[in-house]
Amino acid sequence: MTAQLNNTNSPLHADAAEAPFKVRVPIAIKLALAITLLIVGGMATLGFIILENQKAVLSQQISNMGSAIARQFASSSTDMVLAGDNLGLQTLANKLVDKQQIRGAIVISETGDVIVSSGTVPSLKTIQARIGQTEAPHSFEWSPNDGNPLFCFSSPIKFRDLIAGTVLVSFSKQQMIRSLEHSRFVILTITALMTLIAILIAFVMSRHLSRPIHNLVDASKAIGGGNYQYQLSERRNDEIGELACALNQMAKGLLKKNQVEDAFSRYVSSNVARKVLENLDEVQLGGKHVHASVLFADIVGFTSLSEKHPAEEITLMLNEYFSCISAIAKEYNGHIDKFMGDCAMLVFGVPEHTNDHSFNAVACAVMIRDTVIQLNEQRVKQNKIPIHFKIGVNTGIMVAGNLGSSDRMEYTVIGDPVNMASRLAGIADSDQIIVLEEFFKQDDIRKRVNAKANRVIQVRGKQDAVSTWTIKNIKQEYCNNMQQKIRELLNQPLNSTH
Image (cartoon, rainbow, N blue to C red; front, side, top):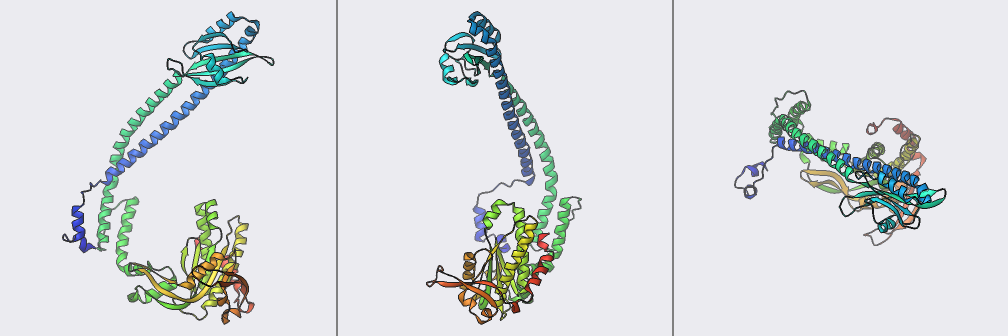
């Protein structure tokens, strides 16, 4: 790849030369823009929240004041309405209207006629359409012909249980609008000032931060090009200094660890990795047919659990259960092939062949089931989430080997027995172990395992239905102190849970 990039006659270089020139934006400018946008965005958000809050407060204040004045006006008008003192009502309405904040007042009789009116108020038709025939106080907005919106508040005129009429008072909305405009002007001014300050501070900070980053980029390019002798001279007492020191240490160790890390990056199982390290020159793609066994352990209802609980809690839970499964697999000469979300795939009989791989697989499944049951009891006492597994086990001829690409591969097994084990786990119930009838009827399985017939299922891709069996337990003489091993496993600390 390096040779291609340096070769000016290569097609890749020709395409790059014909590509449109892209402007390189220095990191100092990017940092300055990011800091500026962060401050301006924060100020804008804060201003919006303050304006909306002030608007709500002013609206509530006007509403409270308007309702109170309307009630007071109605109370003062009661005796005059009952006595038919229209002159007194008119005087009271004229005194109430100040032409500034209170723009108008009107008294309406119980029959719907206007008794007195002062200032700017809605028409009788508008009032009746807005407040209707209800006896409860009302409020609404109304815009007269002059375009200045008003708040209108009504209140019934009551004498004991008798409704003698209705009063309505209109308030100007201009005061609230002016207050909001003033606040908006202040916030915009402060935001503009903070923007200027932010640009200045951001530019100075970004220049200071970008200088050592350029040095780190140069170092990474040198090390990426194979110059593991490159050393940074940065001496800083901060995170960048620590990064420079770590980069120096990495460069020193890369030469020694390169071959080992390249091999280990393709494998996860310890026994597979050990096999590879013994034959480093033979690491290549390929596979061979082997007779082995495979086990799938799938969590019941994992999607529902992950939706109801925090991600951190789910992660800790999975680590605890999968740590147990990994330890149990080692007890029976198996290894974790892979973790696929909430499912674990275990392989027995590869890469090192064992004649007992079928029994090891089913014994491992029983121990996993019993361990999970006891672990659930512990977790319930600790108010933690319990989970259950459904397990499928199968054996047969499968392909084992390095699959993938030349620069990224994994040692795994594929084939119809593997697919069948996965499907058996899919149809199993909670805490149930499912195998095929052919698996159970093997001599070394039938004499050492207790099982009962399950159901006959139709498998996609197969013409004939297959019979399945449910594994109950391992016969006592072949248990090898399984329960004691479970107690020891549950009592010892698991690194993944701490």
